[in-house]
Image (cartoon, rainbow, N blue to C red; front, side, top):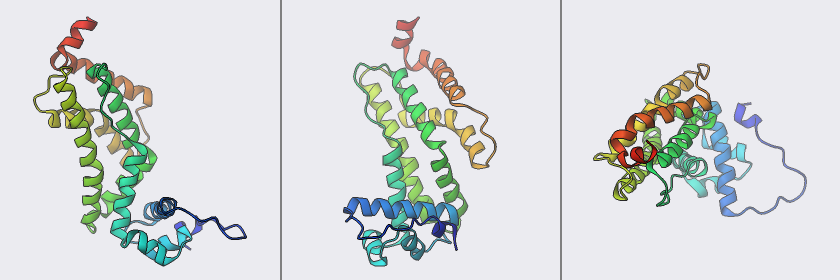
Amino acid sequence: MSLCESLIRRRKPGRPAALSEAERRDQILDAAERCFVSQGYRSTQMDDVVKACGMSKKTVYRSFGTKENLFVALIDRVMHDDIALEMPEDHQPADVVIADILSRLSAFVLSDRQVNITRLVISESAHAPELAAAFHDNGLRCCKEKLTDILRHLQATGRLKADRPAELASLLVGAIIGESLVTALIRRPQAMTDRDREGRIEHLLSLVRISLMPERTAQTS
C-alpha cells in the first residue's frame, strides 16, 4: 500500500453529505497534494488520486482531465490560499509596505508545504518540464509580477524611486529568501529564525532607504 493510500480516511456509515463543486475540487486537490509529495509526480497516477480522495474516477477526470491540469490547479490554489499581495493604502510609507511584503513572502516560500512542492518540482523537472513551467508561471512569475506592480505603484505615488521595479523586486526577494531557501531544500537545519529574518529585512531596508526613499529618510532622521 502506498503512503498516499494509507492517508485515505475511512468513510462513516450512511449517505455522505453532498459536496459543492468547489468542495469536490478542494478534496481532490488535497488528495493530489498528498500523493505528489509522498510518491513524486511521475510515480503518481490519476488512479492514486481517485483512491486517495474517495471519489469516482469520472468525478476526478471531469474536474481536472489530466494529471498536469491537476498539478497546475494545485499550484494555483497554493498561491491563492497562502499568499495575497495587494496594493498598499495611499498613506503607507514604502519601507513599511516592502517590509510587510518581504516578511509574508519569506514565510510563504519557506513554509514546509511550499518547500515540499518546490523540492518536488526540482526533482521532477528534467523528466516533466511541464511541471517546472506550471510552477514558474503560476507561482514564481505571478508572485514577482505582483510585487513589481506594487513597487511600480509606490513609484507612481511618489513613495519610491525605482527606475527598474522588476529588477528591484528580484533583488529584494533574493536578498531575503535565497540562502534560506537553499538551506531548506537540502534539508539542513534552519539556521535563521523568524526574528533573524525580520532583522535581515530591516537591515536590507536600511541600506536602500537613502537611495530609494529619500523623503522617508528625511522624515525619520
